[in-house]
Length: 329
Image (cartoon, rainbow, N blue to C red; front, side, top):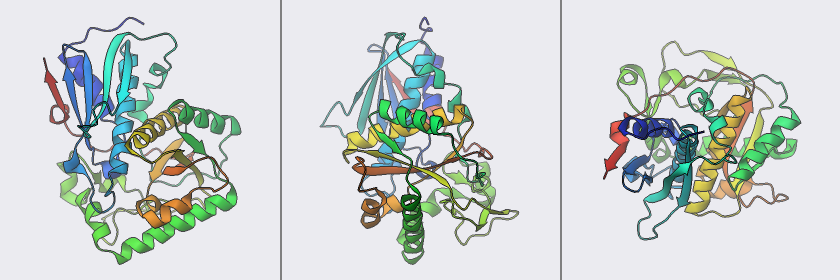
C-alpha cells in the first residue's frame, strides 16, 4: 500500500478515528499535537478530564488514551503509513504519553489496517446478550490479539467468573454508601435536554435498559435518576467475561493495556461480537487485587470485558476534532 498524501484534512481524519476509542464515562481524556516537520503525532493526556474519585491514580485515563493511541496506529496504517510508536518518551513530561511517527510507507508485516472497518462499528453495548457460547477458536484469537500488544487476556473459569461478579456487586454497594463516588458519574452522564448538546460523556440513550434480572456486570448510569421511556430487561445469568491484564502496574503498563483492549474490541467487533467494559470493581484498591486469578500469570487486572452475541450499542458523542488537535510546523 502506498502512503496517501498527508494534508490538514488527512491529519484531522486520523485524529477523528483515534478519538472514536472508548474511555471511562466517555470523558475522552486525550489531546493530540501534530508536528508537520517531523511528521509525528504527540498523544497527550488531558488532566482536566480526569476523575479524582473513581480514578485518582489516572490508571483508567491512561487506558483510554492507550485505546485512542491504538486507533491512531490503525488509521495511519490504513492510510498507508507505518506508525512507529514510542511510549512515555519524556520522563520530565508525564502528560506526553506517546509519539507516533509516520515513518514511511506501511510495512507488509504490519497487521493493523485490517482492523480499520471496526473503528466506527465498535460501540459499547449495555443490552442483554444471548447465552450462546463464544467458540474456543475465537477466544484464542482474542487472547492472541492482547498478546501482540504486550498484555494478556484470560477467559476465567466458572468459579473465577462468579467471584468477579461478586466483587462487581460489592463495588456497586460501596458506591451507594459513598456519595463522592457518584460525583464523577453525575458529571459525565447526561439525561434529558442535555443529551442534544453534549459532546462527551454518556447520554441517556446509551444507558441501555434497566436490569430486571440477570448477572451481567452492566453499570446503571442512571442511578436513582428517572429516565423517561427507559425499558427494563432480563440480562444473561452467566455472562461471558474476559480479564485483560499486565505484568506490571505503572503508566507504561496502563498504556499497553489500553492498546491491547482496543485491539481485542476491534477484533471482536469484526467477528460479530457485541462488547462492553466494566472497571467497577477495579476502582476500589482493596477489591482490585481480588479480581485476579492467583493461579494465572496475570499480575494486575486492568479491565473486565463482557463479550457475547447481542444488540450493538448506539454511538456516543465525540468532541470536535479542532478541540483535541493542535497542528504546529
